[in-house]
Length: 389
View 1: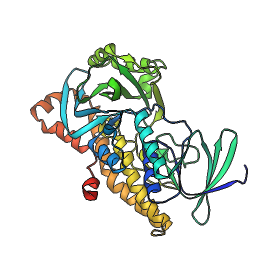
View 2 (view 1 turned 45 degrees about the vertical axis):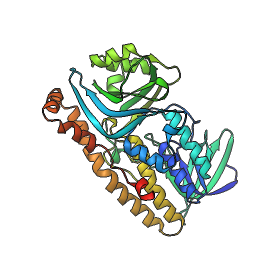
View 3 (view 1 turned 90 degrees about the vertical axis):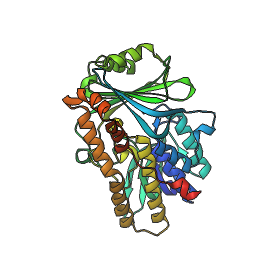
View 4 (view 1 turned 135 degrees about the horizontal axis):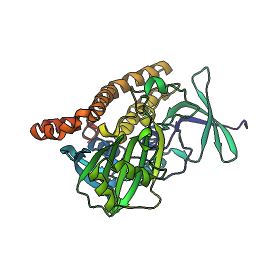
C-alpha cells in the first residue's frame, strides 16, 4: 500500500441512513468528516420504507422535510395485520407516518451531508482498520485500483446487518441463531389507503405500504429455511410466501413489479442485545437489528446517530476521554434501545406462537391490545424540535 496519508476527524463506514445522518451532525459541528460506502448511491435497498412519526421528527431536526420537496411521500395513519387464517387487527399510529423509498431518502440525506461540509466517497472498500496506541485509527481504503491509508481520530461503523471482515465477529454473542432473508420490490397497480399492511406467512411476514409517485413497496423478512425451495428471484420468493396467506396472494395478483427495484439481502440475523461498540462505535443496524414487525429501523438508525454524534463530538472536542466516549455511548445505547429490543423480541415470539389464530378475536374484544402493540414497539419522540423552536 502506498504511504499516502489523509487526515480526518471522523470516518464513517456505511452511507445509509445511520451513516449519512451521523455525517451530517458531525460536519455541522465543524468536524472534518468522511462518509464511505463500498457501493454506489443512490440505489434501491432492502427496507420496509416506512417512516414513523419519530423518524419524521429526526429528519426535520436534520433539516430534511421530504413533503416540501418534489418527492411527495405518502401519508400513513394506521397499521393493519393480516393473519394466515384471514383474521385481521387494526391500530391507529401515534401520529402521521410516511412512505418514502430509500432511493429518494438516501439522496436527500447525502445532499444534506454535502451541504453540511462532509465528504462522501462511494465504491470504496475498507481493507483494514488499525488502532494506534494513542487511540487514533489508520484505515486502508481501496477505490478501484487506488489504495490509500487514512488517519482519523474516530471511526464509526454504519455498515448495516452484514459484518465486514474488519469488524470483530461477535454475532454469536449479540445475534439470534435464526437466519433470515430480506427481499423488497416496488410495484404499481395496487390501490392502498393511508395504512401499512402486514401479512403473516410461513417463515415470516410481508409488509406493504404506499411510497412516492403512486408506487407501493412490498418487503418481506423470511427464514432462510422457508425460502430455500422458492426460487432465486424476489418475485419467486414473495409468491412462495403468499401461498400461506390467501389475502397476500390476492394482493400480489394485482401488483405489477417496477423493473430495477428488486433487492435482497442475506444472511440477516436479528439482535438479542444491542452491540454499541467493538473497537469503535456502531450505529443503525450495525448496532441492533430489530424485528421489522416490532419496530421502525429508520427511527433507530436516526436516534442512534443522534446519540453517537453527540458523544463523538464531545470526544473530538477533548471533553471526553476515549474510555468515557466508549462507556458513555455503550451505557446510553443500552438505556435507549435495550428495553425496546426486549419488548420487540417478546412480541416477535408471541406473533409466531401457535395461539396466534386467536389474536384478531382478542383484539376485537380488547382494542387496547392493538394500541399497546404499536406503542410498545416504537421509540418516543425526543421533543428536539419543540426545544429548538
